[in-house]
Image (cartoon, rainbow, N blue to C red; front, side, top):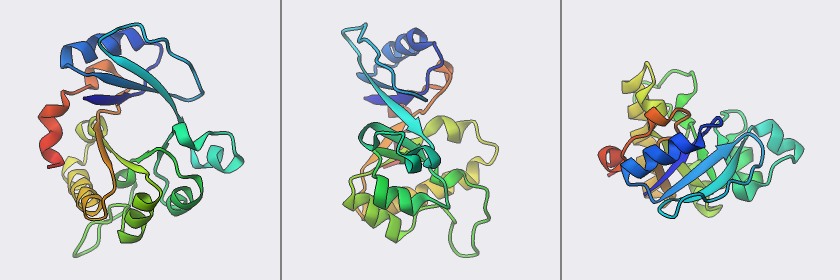
Length: 178
């Protein structure tokens, strides 16, 4: 089991919770590149950076080790040109759904491009749990997962937690993806 988290100088707390949850790997995501020493033998620690579309546009980020939060105006450009490792947050944009389908942020074109460029769709569990519009967001996530499965886009289920208490046992929430 792998989890993606956003620590704020509380890495040891994340490691302790990850051990209790039975995680095998933690991916610490920072604003700027940092090297984290693997202090435990049971959990593999990796690092990545989170970038905004503007940072990517100016060339200040390495796309191979980058996680990007979706921006509806620049999603297609990011997918085609930058090709980050993971993209997430497509469904959290403030926009209304259509009458007969959800405005979920991913359509068949972006799903095909994500599959072609080997970009992973990140499923942020903590954002769903902490949201005030859980029903709408869950519906959008389910539609995105359906499209990702159809076009064979890799999906990663992770907490994307900034607080260690927001981490969840991913076996408990895996039913959302299946």
